[in-house]
Length: 379
Image (cartoon, rainbow, N blue to C red):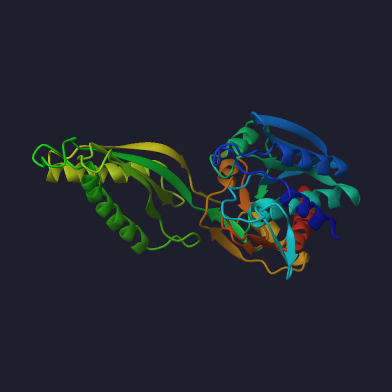
């Protein structure tokens, strides 16, 4: 069995569900031990950097024999939960695919980048430059791992091995989470003149948000990542059947484009609330920013995507430039001064009950990264 596939199977077999998403989940401690051992066997200098209790980043470094540019390969070790999956941590190979939680998102990419580093280290080492391999925690929630990483480490370029079907993704969307609180007045259900229904009033907000989403998706798309969008994620309110609800709460997400500020979501919602107050002075509501991450983009003419396209050709692949609709740690690296792109194997079933990665893509990803790292340090 190819060493990259053997490592992938080991990675999938480890439960690394993010404990922020699923309370009581084990987190990334055990998989960090596995990654660290693999990097040490490959001959890299390894450091384990605790980000939160039981949740360490692992960083391996391979120094070139001569000075040159540095490059970072980065991937996350956490996964989403496994509800509805019958045997999520038993890797199963079928029809050229490997199934299991995290196989595509993103243990396939993590296996490819570690295998690339191992191949370089074990076949003459790095002629010049510096290779940094980083396996980070918590990308599936708020990326505390990537935030910690960029406080300690720098590189001239970065490749985040998220699943891209072997396309070279030079940009991706951002997101913003907003909470909307709508006030009502509690009253007995039999006394409508005394009550104000916060849930029905929230319906006014939802109607305006639906119209805003249609307008966003009708705008000319960004050439790589499409249009902005929004959706209502969670709604709560009310106390009992026979009472007017005095409060209703919406938590929503707005997907943002490169060039849009993170504050745009709250600004749009406040515009809706202001309009509703003008129409009905008894309407009372507020919007609060919960959390956000910016979109990110590297110019397609930047040296990094050009070098990766050349490397992929040398490895026998067919380069394609694209963008990603999902957010990734590449934005954390990029906004910290490490120009970064996405490149990883294909598959299907991200966050679903049947997830797989294409094994041939894992090997192609590894081979292209080997070509890229060698060429980047020499440039």
